[in-house]
Every structure is written in structure tokens, then in C-alpha cells.
Image 1 (spheres, rainbow, N blue to C red):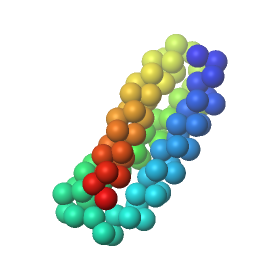
Image 2 (cartoon, rainbow, N blue to C red; image 1 turned 180 degrees about the vertical axis):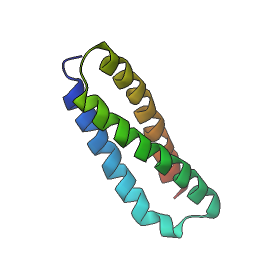
Image 3 (cartoon, rainbow, N blue to C red; image 1 turned 45 degrees about the horizontal axis):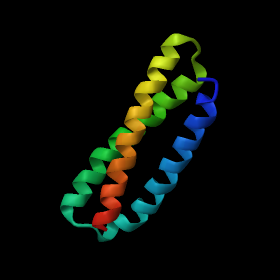
Image 4 (cartoon, helix red, strand yellow; image 1 turned 90 degrees about the vertical axis):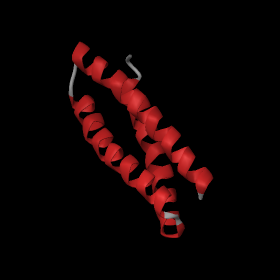
Length: 87
């Protein structure tokens, strides 16, 4: 788990790029996709806040939270892919 801070940084950067790209395209999206976007965006803000906390924390508790954040990151990644396909 020594690579976690670097890996988390990469995950955050990848998700930020996809999120920014999709946000630009959202003005053309249908209402259903907008609802999906809003739900994902709430998760994004929660994910970012928790990721920053993990970056500042140490020990086993941080590892557990880091693993949970990886799951949320993957959920965000899938959600963004879904929206991208719909746009």
C-alpha cells in the first residue's frame, strides 16, 4: 500500500478530467442524464473530501478508508462512462 498516495492522485486526476469533459457536454443532455450526473456529482464531492482525508491520515484506518475510496472511485468511473455513452 506504499503506492496509495500516488495511485489516489492518479485516480483523482483521471476522474477530474472525465468529469470536466462531461460537465462541458451536459448542457446538451436530456433530463434523465442530468439526474444521473447530479447523483454522480454528489458522490464526486464526497469522494474528493474523503480522498484528501486519507492523504492526511496514516495507519491501518487510512488503508481501510483508502480501499473503500477505491470502490467509490470505480463506481464514479463506471457512472461517467455510462453518461459519456449517452451523450
